[in-house]
Amino acid sequence: MRSEEEARRAIGLYGDTVRRICMVHLKNYADTEDVFQNVFLKYVLHSAPFDSDEHEKAWIIRVTINACRDLLKSFFHSRTVPLDSLIEKPGQIPEDHREILEAVLALPAKYKDAVYLYYFEGYSASEIGSILKKNVNTVYTLLNRARQLLKNRLEEVPDIE
Amino acid sequence: MNEKWKNAFNEIHAEPELKQSTMDYLSDRVYSRSGREKKKIFTVPRFAAAAVCLAAVLLFGGYRLYFIPTAFISVDINPSLELGINRFDRIVSVEGYNDDGQELADSLNIRFMNYQDALEQLLADDTIEELLSKDGVMSLTVAGDNDTQNSEILEHVESCVDGRQNIHCHSGDSEEMHSAHESGMSFGKYEAFLKLQELDPSITADDVKDLTMHEIFDLIEEYSEDHNNGGTSSSGIGSQNGQSNSPGDNTCTRTGSGTGSGSGTGSGTNSGTDSTGHEGHHGPHHDR
Image (tube, rainbow over all chains, first blue to last red; front, side, top):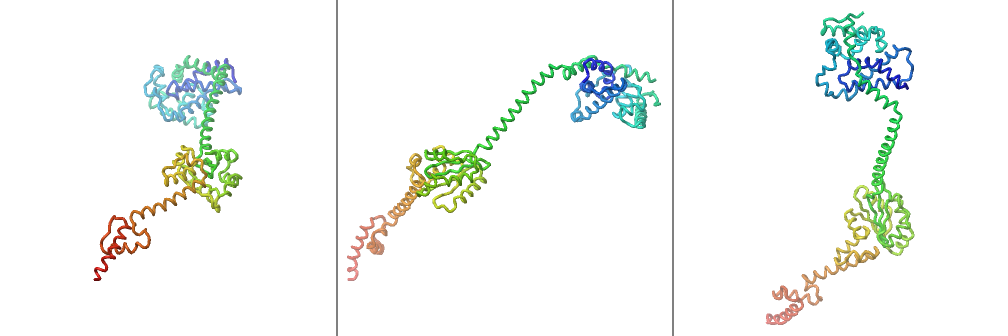
């Protein structure tokens, strides 16, 4: 078990990343809070050492993505609609880059992680492959298809290298 | 270009309150030992309470299931006692309905036995053997709410006492059984009492209470004989007046009706002699 200081450090370091992944996948604050707390609870209870900070970050990303998926898969989620998803919540998305974020959020769930990790976290396709436990070629396919979809909504979408 | 994308996400940060609530959550769940202990202390009695409730419900249900008799065998000689049988065919209550019965019930150790074994033991009991050999009459009555169980028990009881002359078996319904208990008698005796009361309405439950079954059956027999005899004679008095008299009168009646006189309600003997008289007188007149 990790100490309270380690937990505080991890939340400070990776809180934003976790929050962003939650935003990509989840539609309301209560779910975000659930996942956020769960991820750091798992972190605190996970006692195996990490090789490096990068390794730690990748672990957090992996855990967050899984937590989001589990939440969305759960029976309660698949059968109910949260009240605030019925109301438009522009406050959650900053005005400046609304277009980009909305375009990403509108993507099918399977593309979201790859797009987020590639365009924002700057991971390479092979790194994304190891985080998402997918073949590199599959990651390329995901990214290219996502790009095509984004192009329908946005004028400029960076190329995949 | 990529910068623009990075900036898009850069503007999203974990809210300070989210971080704080997560820290609170972690310290509550993981770090706060007192919190953990508090929870532990709280959960143990809660589980214990739930377990106790469950146990109570199960015990009560089990008690009802096991200890509430669903059928009764009422055994009457003079000691009259009643065996309560539960749905698992076990004896769950042995109750004496008079002093002898109570004594016998106390001396028997048949509680929680299968009723078939219990019945065998009961019939082999010295007191009962003695009473039966002294020409006592035993009555075994089966009653209960469950018809299937009733008929099964009755069948067994019948096969058990098969070949013994002075044991009667019958079944009754539970409603009558309850009224029997109200009047303080075992069911078998009450049945006999009802039979007796039919014959002589003046007999009350108290009169019968202390009689042996043999005595009651004797009384029933006596009354029914009386009843039969009394019944035929009284009806004879009403309708067959003339015929029931001495054979000598027979002719009188015949001749009386022949002449057309003395019919109806007139007293038989008188009209009979009268008509003989007439006949006697008239006869020669006609001849002449």
